Amino acid sequence: MTGYRPRTLALTAFVLYVGALASAPAESPWLERRLDAVFADAKLASASVGCLVVDLRTGETLYERDPDRALMPASNMKLVTSLAALRFLGPSFRYSTTLCAASPGEGSPVIDGDLYLRGSGDPTLRHEDLTRLAEEIAAQGVRTIRGDIVADSSCFPGPPLGLGWAWDDETYAYSAQVCGLGVDGNTVRAEIVGGERAGDPCRLDLTPPGDHLSVDPGCVTGAADAPRPVVFRRRAQNVVAATGPLPAGARASAVLSLEEPDLYAARLLHAALMARDIAVEGACRRGETPADASALVTHESASLRDLLAAMNVPSDNGIAEALLRTVPLAEGRPGTASEATGMIEQWLPDIDVPVHPLRLCDGSGLSRLNLLTPRAIVGLLTYAAGRADLCEPLLASLPVAGASGTLARRMRSTAAEGRVHAKTGSLWGVSALAGYVTAPDGCAVTFSILMNNYGCEGAEVRELQDRACVALTRFVDAQRP
Image (cartoon, rainbow, N blue to C red; front, side, top):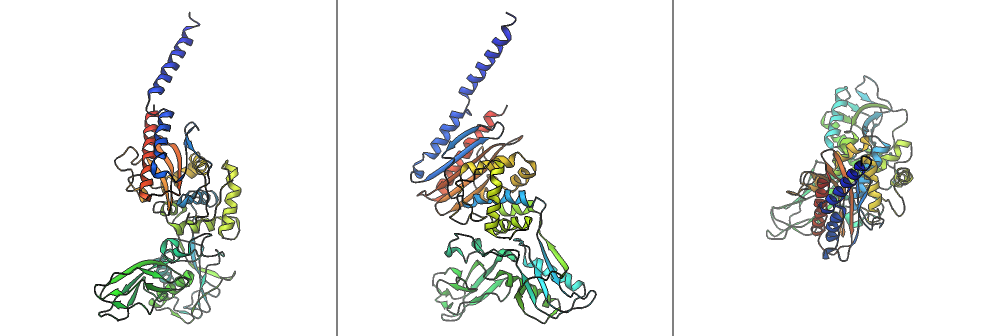
C-alpha cells in the first residue's frame, strides 16, 4: 500500500485538476466557442478574417482561424517597423539635424559661403527647433551669411511617397511626403478666409507663417449662406484650393501636406535667421553638405523609445516611414524603403517568422499592397516578449484599451480596460488589432486579428474585435493561479 498511495494521490490530483479545467470558464474550448461566435457574426459574412492567439507562458496556441492567410494589415505594419527599428537602431537612437558651413570663419561674424541645413530623417523636427538653431548661430556672433541656405535631404534618396499609396491621399497630412529633411511632419495648417462681399478674393493664412503655399486665384467669396467648402492642396503643387466659394466672413482650414518639404524647412530657417538680424545674401536651394564642412550647431530628437510612442499611440504615418528608411542607414546602405524591407525580409527567418507569403511595401501600412499574416505578427510579438530590450519599449509605445491613443475610447468598463496593449489598423475595408493581454506578472497572451473586405462600417468590426479582447482577458484571469 505504501508504494501505491502516492500514485493514487497523484492520479486523484490530476483527475481533480482535469475536472476543474472542464468546468472552468477559461478552458480552451470555452475560449474557442467565444471567439468562434465573434467571427461568425453576420457582419463578417463577406469578410476575410485571420486570427491567432498564443499563450506566452506556455507557447500553446489557444486559438487560430486562417493564421497563414495573407491580408492587408493597415497600420499593423507599424509593429514590423517598430521592432525592425529597435533591432537595427537600438532604443537609444536619436536623429540629428545640423547646421554646417564649409568656411565657418571661427570667431568671425561672417560665414563666407553657404550654410547647410543637414537632415538625418528626423520626422519630429518642428519649426521651433529651427528657430532655436537660428538663435544658437546668433549667440555665436554670426551676423552675415554670404551664400545660400542649402537644404540637405540626401539621406533619403528614394521617392517621397510609398509604393502603392493612393493618389487622392497625397495632399493630406496623413499621407505627407517622406523626406530626409522635413519640418512639422512635412505639413502646414492652411486657412482660407473669405472676404466681406461675394466675389472678393479669399486670403490664405498659414501656421507657421511663410510663403511656401499660395492660394488658388479661383478661391473667391460667395454668398453668406453658401455651404462651407473643403480645403485641399492641388496635386503636385503648393497651391491651396477649395471645393467651392467661401461664405462671406467665414474661415475654412485643413492640415495639408507639402511639396518640396526640404525647401520649406530651409525657408523657415532663412526667416528665423533674418528675424535675428542675421543677413542672408543668398537664396534657398537643395544640395549636399561637403565632406569637409564643419558642424556649427545640432538639434537632436528624442530617443527611439520615445519616438515609438509618438508613432504608435496616435498611429503617425510620417514617423513610421522615416524610421523604415533609417533602418538601412545603420548598416551604411541607402535610406530607401526597398533597402529597408529587404533587410527585414532577411532578418525575419532568423527569428522564426515566416516570410512567405508576406509582402512589405512601406513602414506605416498606408499602402494597400502590404500583406501580413496573423502568424507573422504573433511571431514578431512573441519574439519581442522574450527580450526585455524589445518588449519594454514596444509595450510602452502601444495604445492601451480604454486609456490611450487609438484605443482610448474602446473597451471601457470591461475586463479588457487597461489590460489590452495593442496596435490598431484601419483602411477602407480593412481593420486590424494586434498586441498583448497583460496579467500582473507581465504579458500573458499575444494575439493578431486581421479583417479585410467586410461590408459593414468600421466601427462594427472594431466592436467585434473588442469582444474578442474581452474574452481573452477573461481567459487570462481564469488561468491565473
